[in-house]
Length: 369
Length: 183
Image (cartoon, rainbow over all chains, first blue to last red; front, side):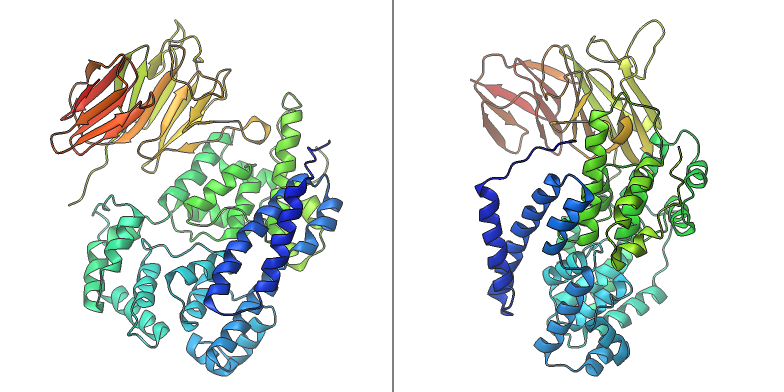
């Protein structure tokens, strides 16, 4: 199948922007960081356009891969930069974050902090404000940005906004422990219907720990429904498209046990969304690009990002699947395994550690229909 | 103060307005009425499919699922297209979302399409219809302030604390404490 080739001067202009962005990213002062963020967006758009022009996986490997740095590289560069900026040894940084020196050393050498909580603590240790923390969580950690309607994030946002707190992690831990001990959620209570932006404004007016505890106690029902819309959307897609039950679908497709656990936890409204699992769920439910972006958005995450090696491959796979579907809409019977099978085939050809971990969680599906 | 959300669908077809209190049921079928087909949200235009779509409540959130019929549905100015392999793509509804049934890919409001709005509001009462034909400037007044609009688009909705107004060109629909005038 042939795609619309739109090679034009616009691309040349964006290439120039990309090079400029790389040159400027060497600086560490704030102005340059803002410039780089802006140019970063331009670069992402450029890569997205390039992906849409790739006709096959070989073209994707040749054209796109050289433009991308892996998540490991980006995170390790960022953490090393934090240490330089703070003038801090690995040991001292580890002490602030509550981890050992070898763990910090691993982070600086390409090992990704293991969960969102660690990303939060690293961001607090780096002295980030709320905006910087959001960039750190979303762009580097691929986690949801700060969301004031979850208990942990609410406390984190308070701590980040208080300039007089010197050890933010210690304060964050002590407030959380105190709240968990003192506040018991009454399930009968109905959550207030309030927008997140209005809730953020209310939180920003909280100026002391006592006020924060009162604020959380008043809004405790709200924290229990933070991902309610995400859970409902995932269930709506399962219900709308599974002829049988989700159990039949998952066993039929040979889902990994961890993905089955995710669906079970979604039903019980207990799952804390993680980005790669959402993408995996989307592939297993044969969602298109728009639907996966909607799921990410409801989990308070950014849409699929072309800048990231794994996600650029996912965008390619989804676009190719949609294109194929458009040309073959009156084709043969629907096979729910098609998208997973195709994704596994394409991702497998990329020979990349970051992606291999994800592939291991995609169902083992026979190529025979 | 804790507000109890009431979910409603306002539907305008061939100039007539209907309000459905969605919370009365967990699921509402949308379609054209025939001798064999009796949907919950009963539409009559031939551009609407018999089984056009469904509104479903999942854990307190309302979804619209379009059955990908001939003339389809536009959601907030964008046609709901089937997913991969013609799959149904549920859309999660939030206050103020618009659905236009039967207009193909175009978000047009005319005699061949049905306009619907999902709102979360507690305003009760009967709708009033005001003739606004020929006005190029419209002024809404809710008792607290006057809001003037120059050449508003059909389907413009003004939602205030105690009233809702829907401008549809020749007619404007009013609910609660809100009035319209124009010139």
